[in-house]
Length: 94
Image (cartoon, rainbow, N blue to C red; front, top):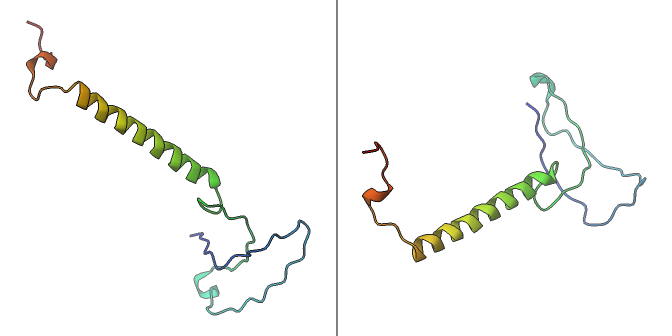
């Protein structure tokens, strides 16, 4: 399986084309599991790292659900439907 683990972050702006140097210590072996290690320097957004549109999608769908919830709550408050009202049942036409 492929996974990424956020180890740390850089709090300063890094200009494009900068040379970055890291000290990496191998604390555990991965050859036994036929794995490998890599260092990935990437952007991180408030909703996640690799795909920032996914977080935006979650916020959008959640907002739409909240708006619909308020709409149906207000509809039920101002125009309630009686429980068990037979006018809404149309199983067989008589």
